[in-house]
Length: 294
Image 1 (cartoon, rainbow, N blue to C red):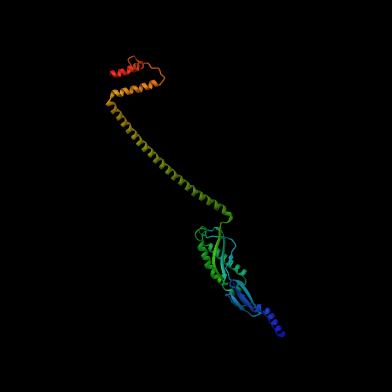
Image 2: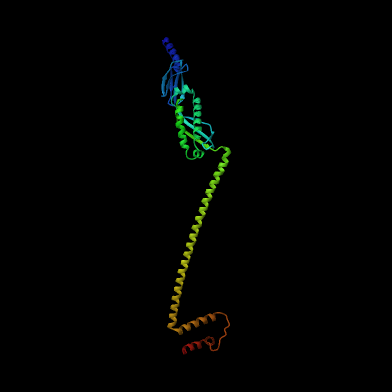
């Protein structure tokens, strides 16, 4: 019994020593290669548990996920002999770990090689386009052409480029201020033009409104004058008809109104002796008698 226990312990120790050398695991975000004395024996692209020769074979892992190849900003000359500061990067992944190991050996070496090829292709592409086109209309086309041109070159190193992007395309500092000043002047010219056109439209609208208001007031005044004149004419006609019906009564009424206004005011009146008002002031009953006689 003791002998069996010793054998089991011995087997466990051997497994603990040999196990890590015999088995290795590749997870879903990794690629791996097995090398023997520096020579690649096999490449592994799928996750799982694998076996290698203990103490002879060694395993190297690479990242299966997307890698960023970020080129440093560079001052490049365009087709129209103008300079731009271009900052570009690419995204890609390792697709052939064996070829990658044999050509660039490490991920750092692969990124450096990818950045060199990306920068070279960017410089060549920028030299074939004008500055204004790069900034405005052709940036997407330039990135697509760089990606298509870089892809077969990086395939030689076991890399596959997915996308190329220009992060920044700026003017050099020595000319940026003058360019911005010209841009500001152009925007000011456009804004001044817009303001002038707006002021012209405003003046036209105000003139139209003032003219319409004047016409409306004139028409209203004309209508009011016509209505007032018609009313006055009707009043005069009614008054004339009333006078023609009884002229003596009208004369009597007008005399009473005149007397009322004179007598209500504190005034001195000089009248001839034969005046009706004089007779009325002397004797109101005499006035009545006068009318009765008439």
